[in-house]
Image (cartoon, rainbow over all chains, first blue to last red; front, top):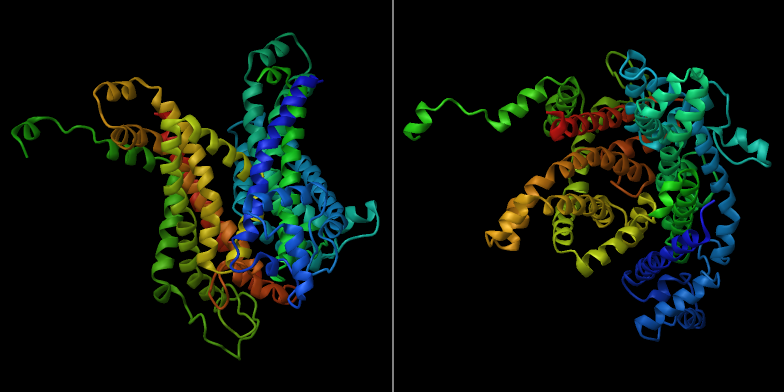
Length: 313
Length: 289
């Protein structure tokens, strides 16, 4: 396991980055033309409601003090009131977040299931016809926007073949494996293209390395060499890549949730934008940033656990 | 022309050598051909499109793909292929304008922070960390939410985020070039900083940036059409692939071609940029020569 000192130093690194993230989000509402209090309030807000918002955001104070209010409110979980939902922003987001988390993990699982066997298959036949065909296919996948992949799957597997529902969200964990299959697959086809390309490259490299040649020379069976020696080493780069693609993954959920009418935070973001619900937009942007930085942190920890050499860095 | 030029054997020209190597690569040729054709479609849609993209034909409503209408017709009998061809104009512009300013700003900023280092570089490092903490699409649509939907605002939003990626790349390249002997020599000769950065370091650092720009134009089409589809990019009635796909969304059960055919243009054009970008990367890598 990584040492406590490593974990602590890695945790501390997040603080300055996150302060800057907060500055961006703080400036966001202030860049809107006009009074920030009006932007953050309902269209028919009374003078008293506006006064309450001014009080909460510290709008009568200098900008630096306002930022202090913003940090204090955010840390205590007070993200304001959604104009669209007429409820606290934090409450609305927490309600919708599990859907998006489920969809993302489902998509990650599917993309590993698609990419890993194909990458291994292609890498062991590097530059052969099968390798070139697989790589060509995935290059096409990389040129497809996620919303379009979604529409194609929806038309073919949903509407024509009626294998899967064309949208919505199920009631239980198992039910959702079925209900979210198409949205998860849409994201997975895109991320697996990135994953497959990288995994294949690192597999080719590992297959060519001295310790693999040594393992073969020892007469170890091919299957043992591939699983214990090759896959374990290629795993490090795959985990890193998956961790770093979390931004892509979140962008993907935003689009597919819209295409398939899945009630997650991605679709909520678009609803918020069309309703000009600035408190909700602000809260969601912050939520996405938290998800991404926690994933980056987790990636670093898993990476240093898989590859002890990285702990020195 | 001097006498020496006339009697000396022709020197191998750097550019013609590059072209000769490029022409041997099928991937480069394919990418070049796709983008060349795309440019022609964008420049002369009126000459190439078989029908008027806006003309209603009440006798040919929601017809599936046929010889007369290879991509079918939409709910007003308009020819989908002609609409896709007219959309090249907007989408090729999108690839260019959503990336070119980000590239120029990133190139300059990256060169300066890479060359001078110090506090500017430290601040830049924090900005990069903060920007990559947002999913790209989320940040872009949040900025569009402030500015309002539309093509120009979309360019501004994408540029505001995207320059960071170019600057990060340029900075790393400049740092590597700065450590080379020729850079030290230029400094010893007493050249100005500006001359060293823009005449010596940047020309040697620029090829990875150009390669990234090619792939980024493919990404810009994916991003731009996604925003068009979501209603945040190009606005109807403008013909843009994402907008065309969104227009057919409600007929996907009965007339799938209205939505699915425009996607072919996105995939082919994206593929063109990636093929060109990847083969340029191979060609410009010094090892590969």
